Amino acid sequence: MKRLEKIYEGKSKNIHTTEDPDLLIQYFKDDASAFNGIKKGEIVDKGIVNNHVSAAIFKFLEGKGIKTHMVKELNDREMLVKKLDIILVEVVLRNVVAGSLAKRMGRPEGETLKNPILEFYYKNDDLGDPMINEYHIREFGLATDDEIEMLCEKGLKINQLLWDYFKERKIRLVDFKLEFGRHKGEILLGDEISPDGCRLWHWDTNEKMDKDRFRFDLGQVKEKYEEVYHMICG
Ligand code: 5GP
Image (cartoon, rainbow, N blue to C red):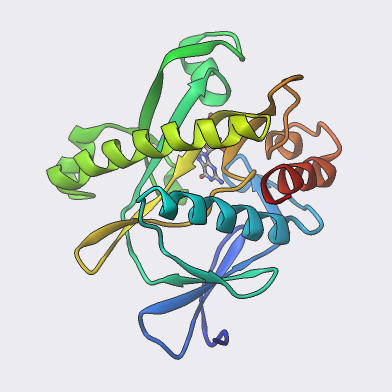
């Protein structure tokens, strides 16, 4: 399957059509951005890491009954996916206090939560992805009641599965972002699951192994992404 027309140029991925109208190719780039595009840079080979890590995680989740948009990995940087009608709601799951939660609630980073926290954000770059709740989602028609219920159910289930998956690989899954889309009457997990959209800390040392290294100039960005790759993909 070959890339045809580029229909979307994202911050870290491009989306291309294929000869099958139901299938698209996600092309993973090395471009990195943070703080809603204010900070820009490049992490060499990030696209390769994110493609392989996402594919391994999607495969694991499929095996546990979570349907994803992935059809297959085509090569180092390309993933063949089903075309989704994207739900414009980002679902964030948190197990440990960090990032915007630490700021919003005035809690110390690293505090383990008694129960996971699920949050919704409106997927809208122009507005900087503001936090919303189910009332906003319903009122502005972003998803139906049934879909909201499914986002919560699937989000929490994925979090439970991935917490154990990462723990077995000596990684603490601090928090992460999910995106879903509609496909032939089903809700599928879309986008990617990689160090770009997850906070991943080494289980023993709590060393950050994710995009926070780029966001806050912590150094060894490429090295830590590659370490995650080896811990996940062997
Ligand atoms: P926070 O709200 O603390 O900034 O982010 C929570 C988690 O969701 C982090 O793991 C972060 O990487 C992820 N996340 C939130 N919004 C986005 C986004 O727009 N893009 C990506 N790649 N990750 C996001």
